[in-house]
View 1 (cartoon, helix red, strand yellow):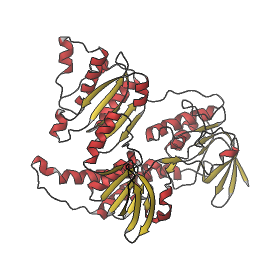
View 2 (cartoon, rainbow, N blue to C red):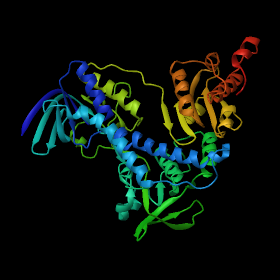
View 3 (tube, rainbow, N blue to C red):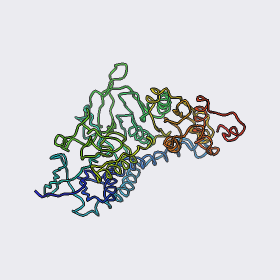
View 4 (tube, one colour):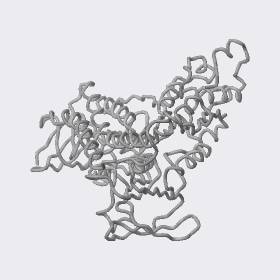
Length: 480
């Protein structure tokens, strides 16, 4: 067996791993990247980009079908070319993937090993490559192996008809019918997208959650909004599944205890993701694992205990979004390179977005954290908001959390284009601004962002920081 030595060994060439490699190299470390493929990052290959390509087609179909509401075109059905939709998804996805692969494929044998790695000791790995086994001795190691779709036991007998985010985009055309298991961000996005493209969709969830929302008010708004466009089966338990000529028969139990059965061409398993840790041989690493088998780590250094092992990206099951994975990779890479001297890096304000229509967003602290801290809540509805009514998108709710002085702590939002308002608010939370300070920034009329302003004003009223001066009245402007 050959032996390779390096300063930093990185397992995984996704967003976190590539970011870690750049940071470690910048710190002067000798870096060895290890990856078994297929490469291209989760975002580009099976996540953010292909799903948004599908949603783009869905939004176009919805806009055409509803143009008559503005006096444009005629009411009625539209023709969707399923094969053309899926072909564009794959074509454009492959371009995104190619850009990532270009970087990885340019690495030489001294920079990268293509194979599966497992721990043989605290800082030693064995890598099973295609034609050889290689022992890797490193001064420090970074785990950046990402995550995979969670296995649904009830579907084990119908695996040929089960799709995940890793396989659904390989369909040559749109399915006739689809059962989506899981109402989280991915499940909700794809369920709505497929439904708008003419697919018969039923969305199941064992709980009554949607899009990652936790605030009872925004969650209630989401249930009302999406129940009008989707067949929602919340608080249901999938009992079993069996193959039939037309696809899959699902058997489930509803909240009242009654059992039902219905057939679908395919089932999409979207009930969460699991860290890719099973094949790493962590029992040989000396690391302390939590109840889910994930190494315990410091979120500000990404160091696992006081060891020479660091963890970054979706594999740590903390904040599974691309910008967090890239930032964690940067911190882990720099600290692995300078180990044993590690430095803490402040976390970015939490920002999570679901690209449903309307958008869903979460910023900063959660509802439960806000409740525990006796936070004040500023609220604004989109039901009568000016710009939203103009575009027939007037539904949704903003809930902003702040302390007794109006300091912004977090929010949950569902509404038109709140992906943009969420960014603005996340920046304000990270800058530790008060609602009264943000209200002195310009809010153009008429824009969706005026809904954000209305909720800020409500928070100011509740914190007693809304001044009644003529100057402020002019600055606040119309309600929008």
